Length: 271
Image 1: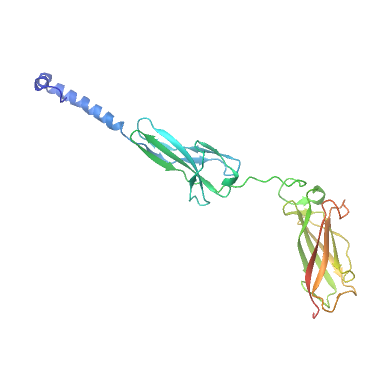
Image 2: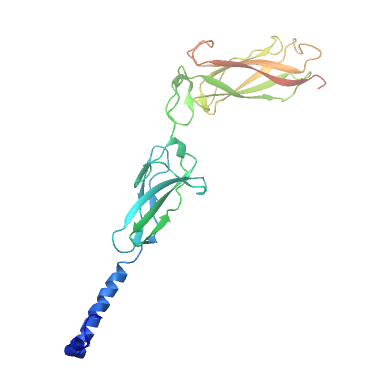
């Protein structure tokens, strides 16, 4: 309108000038609208299971702004509380497959929005702490996580004697009866049911050798022993050593999945 001469304005009259002013206002408002930088109105989100090997999917959230907006994506690995985040190299799209290094950490998803008039960024809340992938059962072990049957364990799977108890806890000169409890596990600490447990005192002739006892569903077997005239082995005896063995019913105890160990219990001959 500034280029119009005074004579032209007079020729247009008041109505024409008003119309030109309205057009100018519309043009001006259009230019202002095109000059709106991006702004996040709803943060990015992450869906999926936080477990090694699983794939997470991100949503970039909601954004306002005009013109041609471009988006950049960054997956970030954070500590278990969602802090100390760092960008994951090469993780720049909407999907990310969790790796072993992510286990024990959380992840966030960051979006950077840009147009000719500016930029803005927003970051998701952290995921749950990423779990490690379930490990396959050791070779020679049945699948699952509960107890196992003795005959279901095969080489290279082996039994383990990982618990023993004695009653009384301290053996005295007057002790006539002992109760021994032995726990057998296999396949990463799973209790073994049906293993045969053998117990004998070393040196021999201190307590009798009871028949083998079978482990229950909790992996424990209980055996009773009576003292013999060979106890105490010496007048200064301070320990009662026992030989323990666990075997499968169909094995001979010196091969296959069987196991053995020496354990000791305190002796106080003043009792």
